[in-house]
Image (cartoon, rainbow, N blue to C red; front, side, top):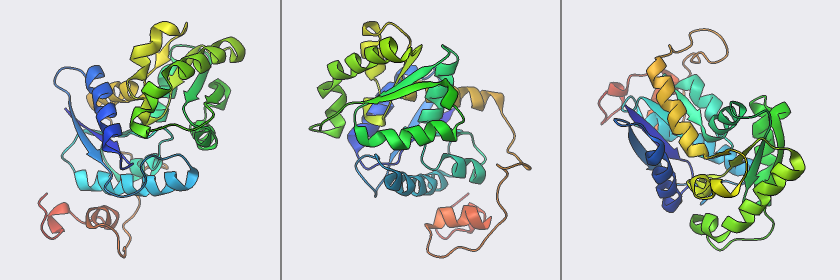
Length: 257
């Protein structure tokens, strides 16, 4: 199977981290197809940036068309996730939802640990969006700045481990989620230093994508995630416009179905 690993920010080094973590978790025969946003911000950290990243994610999903069996929106906070599930027939997985649901299968309450204070309000709203407030023991963030988004996990590794251990001791967390795409792969490196299960969101998302492809769920034709009725568009990227207008990809100039 082919799974699109879609990074809705512009930092290719983060995409490389995501790919390395995802490939390590993928089953034999699973091909990860990576894509990095060509416009937007280097990393998504605020509500406004999440709105921008979500729109870009929809464009990237539309551009991929039917060439993949599932897709992962690889930004913790899941920008554009619910809209993608409305528009597209393939399973679409969010890093945050995949990590949190996996954590719920390993313990009663999870804590989210991340590298920047600015992320906390958006992450809290993501927890609420997925209906998991009662299962979240808290969100812990580091203070201060970092030198490089692509190297933040190496730069802050010891501080993140300390923060995770505080979540276990002080918040009674049964599971730790190391969150944020730039931390992809860190859980595997530090899990032996934290006394509860540690979730890598990218690994969880890849495995859940594989499961959904294997289950072959039908696209909803009723309910809140059925595909919206066609509507005319103005100025959108052509592949996304074709999806919203219910045009076949073969009808898009220069493209084949």
